[in-house]
Image 1 (cartoon, rainbow, N blue to C red):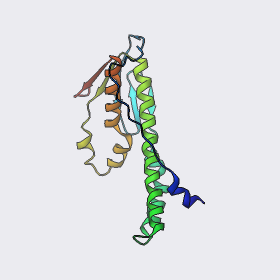
Image 2 (cartoon, rainbow, N blue to C red):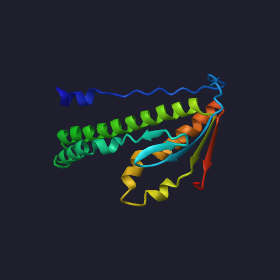
Image 3 (cartoon, rainbow, N blue to C red):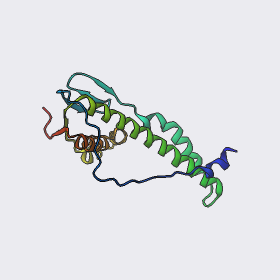
Image 4 (tube, helix red, strand yellow):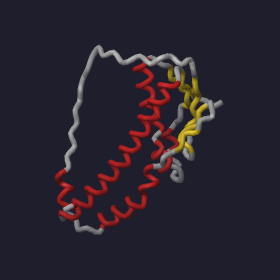
Length: 167
């Protein structure tokens, strides 16, 4: 049954530590781009390419609310509560994995297209204090995108420039 299947799934992780690894060199495109991050659209590039915001959390909120409601009605310490808790956790994990996949694909595409990438340096920590926008800001994952883009640019020897003042 599906309920017993909850306990059978396991995750395995493998961690490799490599030194002196040479990455494939990316051909120079002699192009540069500026990226303006946003909530409605994930980003708008200086060459007017619009990157749509997938809003993975927003799309899953109804299902998440239903699962959390079911969880709250289960008696504490019961095996059915544990199953419901695992369902909620699994949905959060799915949302997280979707978001990570989107960010990895987008960052790789930008790294391959451009030699110099300029983007605004947002103070996300301060922006999240606005309770009306906090959920949407967290769903967009600007900080994670910035982190991923930074290490990929460093890997391939490209320039990532952070602009503190938007112009």
